[in-house]
Structure formats: structure tokens, C-alpha cells
Length: 148
Image (tube, rainbow, N blue to C red; front, side, top):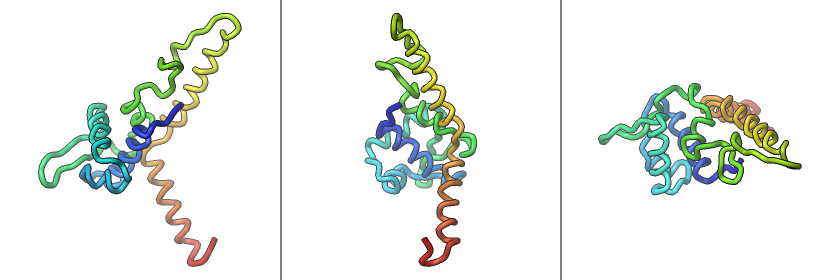
């Protein structure tokens, strides 16, 4: 699995929107807070909207909001919205890789890799990642000043 800048930016943008759920976040704020080039982010937000993960609201108070709760959106949903297949073999989905001769077993290896990746990204929600971030901040604060 290759995690492109587009995929990384998409997950980061979704986390930033999820952090404000059920509120609305402007695209410019997302771009600035996550260091994502604004023109690049616009295309990503369009993909996420088309996939039904985000809704856009117009007007001075407009911006982007999640269509579902952060616990109901998996990292895999975001990755598929921006890149399609999670894993590819020579540009095709891993599920269709077929070999013959000495390499016959290789297709099953690639499908196993795909299932493993799918298991991780489909089991991890935006809420899970936000909870980890909150626990990390609390852990440092709970130890007190100067603690390692």
C-alpha cells in the first residue's frame, strides 16, 4: 500500500472536520491548520463530498461538515474516496491479481496483504484517532511539569 500525499491530506482534513463535529469548518481553515495547499485541498474536499463523507454548506457561516458521526467514518472510507482501491498490483486491485507457473501463490499473498490493510483501516474510525490524540494530551498534562 502506498499512502499518497492526497490520501494523507484527506485523512488529516477529515480529522480536522471531525474535531469540530457537529459544527462546520471552512476550507481555508482546514488548509491552514493542516498545512495543506488550498488548491489541492479543494479537489480532495470535492472527492469526499461526492463519496458522501462531507457536506458543504454555503453562505458566510458555511463550510464543511461530516455527514455522519466520527465513530461511523473509517479511515478506509476516506482512503477509498480519494484513491479507490486500498492496494493495487501493477495498477489493478489486488483482488484480481492472477499468476501462473512458479508465481501461482503470489496472488494469494497480495490478497492477504490487502485484507490485512483493509482490516486496519476499516477498523479505525476518525473518533478512534481523535481519542488517541486527546489521551496523548491528557497523558502529558497529567504527569505534571518537568515529568518525562
